[in-house]
Image (cartoon, rainbow, N blue to C red):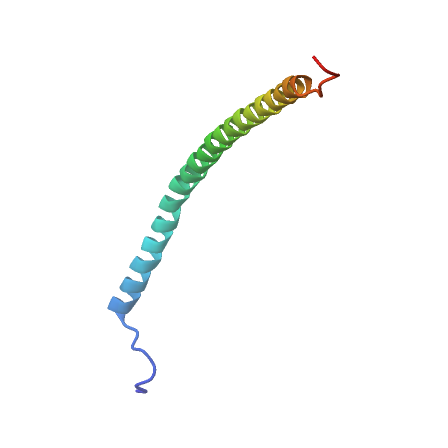
Length: 88
């Protein structure tokens, strides 16, 4: 008998059958949690996008308020700094 060729007997066949069944069971059991994790990941992504949008809107509102305030300050200061028109 050649030593490089593995021995095939009843116990080896039983082990191979058991491993194939175990692999099949594992692949069946991995599918539902994978789908559940995809759903949970999508929900987390939506929540993240919602908060990001809220932060964007708050920053945009603050920038608009700062722009309006700067315009008012420029308007008020341009009226107060006019040159004198002659002797008092």
